[in-house]
Length: 230
Image: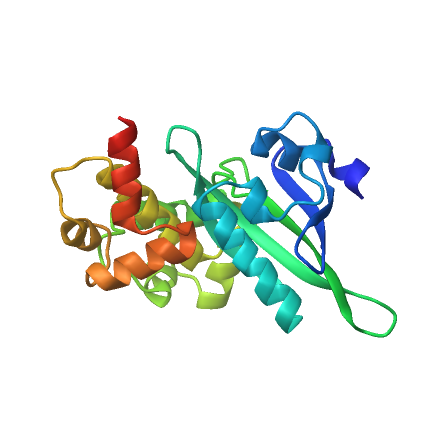
């Protein structure tokens, strides 16, 4: 499996032991950690490999998956590149069990969220809704309203968005809002509360919770880091 997935540039693959240490990784993970060899990753935890907030968040996910033995499916996450640019991914982790049914490790993938596929046969049917979300993310949008806006049932709307964008409509909206928030946080003129309202969140607390859940870092901490780097 590792060899098969070594050549997939937009997908990270890994297997970890009961202590959350890498025992198998594909080359995409190796490249994104910035190390020259896979052996520099093996035997270490995510918190040791991905320095800072993302590594700690990945490690906390591993602890929950290993302790509770529960599958973690299609979790939308953002981490930041070397210039602070957002990189979006969907993470899926499952516990690995032995013949007795005991959890002995975990396996997972994390795939980059692609941009909407304009060449997809169904793109034209959802393009208006995608454009509407991008233009009105500051409003309290609801999925039933968006589906009705283009004349689809809620189930058909969600199915088409998943097919075209590889994410759910709600995840697409979160992505649009937090992409806008990242750009606004780079400017010191707006307060966190003003950015929260500008990105469709009812208040400072709701925005901070969502931003921290998806990125592993508070909005103010991200702003401080970017402005200090500048």
